[in-house]
Length: 588
Image 1 (cartoon, rainbow, N blue to C red):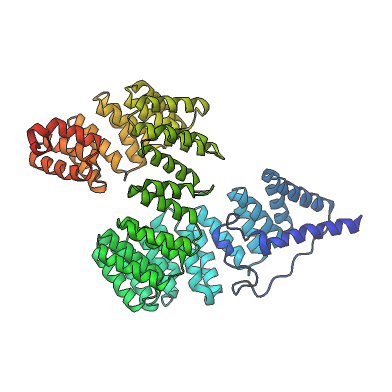
Image 2: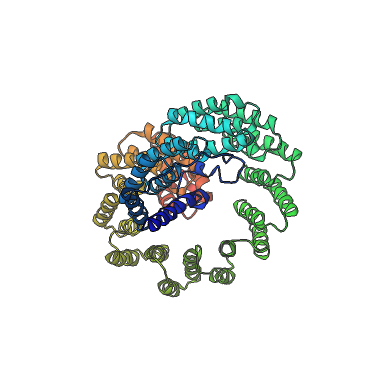
């Protein structure tokens, strides 16, 4: 019996020890810094403390068995306390490590912290134990407590200190106290001013804390220490871009002259040129990339996407086909884009072939929806709907997406009542589906069923209190109908708090303020919204408020310019119909 107990303990302890070699390698199981010191790496401890001699008592055996069996059966509420109690009792680093793993996987932070502390106490030279403990402290926003561990981690592995700073930057970047993170990173980096990664880590912390000047200063220092470091150059470009796009372009262009093989820098340079609408220069960068990396499918795909962004559809089509020929890892994505390009060029038969070639997977449902859209553009609406209804789905969410696509086809055909009924039938089968509730609300507005709109949106808000567009849609509908304006204002204000940079919600706020007679405030929101997104409906609202504010010439110019870009926008057409006889005679 003793021999059996000894073998069982050895087996359990051996299983526990295996965690050092594999069980903790999965990044989903422990904080990212826990992966830094793999056994056999340069940062792994050279010598280990002797393990404690355990007396194989009945109680110890029982706890080991209870903990491991509970863990294997997915019962962390039993496994974690048992392993933690064992770690306290034995002070064995293997058991403490196992307790840490079990607690972290169960998202039990306090037990994980205690277990990691025991692990480090039992094996003070174990860099991995220190990193795990520090990561857990950061997770709990205990930066002061983590600082000593970070300092010792960095000091213990000076050969790899640069890589350690990159890991620290990634870990601390998730902490919401940006100022505290910056202070900590500056303290940690102070002894390592000649390490470029340390300077860049401070630059990134400064950027997150809103100190742009310090971010630029530190990234400049990093590049002086390592002039060919592409990562630092890209960060410096990002920091410059907030101040001046021209400065960012000039810097990155100069960097490429010195380091012409910097692939990611050239890709980002091309993106900046596209954003600045310097398309001929961007095309030269595309050509250089393809010439430098002719067999690289990822580069070819990136060039294709940049070409699409620059409205160079011919060039994009060439590159997408080349990506397929070069064995690009996501061929269905390339096929989907080829379908979109040929659809944009009204080459509908080709578009159908490309969409049909997309195989079941991540892009499949989108491809089927677009396939149906092309059929509808060819006047084959009934066939398009039948196609969507016959698509085989694997999940309820995929069926929801196809139902939404079918409803959109009906709306595009002005069959609003049919769309409303289709979504209503779908909700009978899936009554608590947020996307269907939102779409039915929008369809209800088109058939003048404001009661259904309000009912659907209120249910959606109850299901998802953070669904900004539900508040916005209800508030805007009330404002547009000039009803219950204080309530409409409160709803839109809530939406804006949830999504402060959304141009359409800003537009709704401007519109409700206009309805409330607060034109000056309305103009501020509407101008900011139009600056973010020059949409036809926002232009319609902004022009109307400008007109009411006595700025008729500005309204005239805005509408005229917006009409050139948004000729089919319903809201813009309606406002022009009302005002055209007076201020836009050429639009009649």
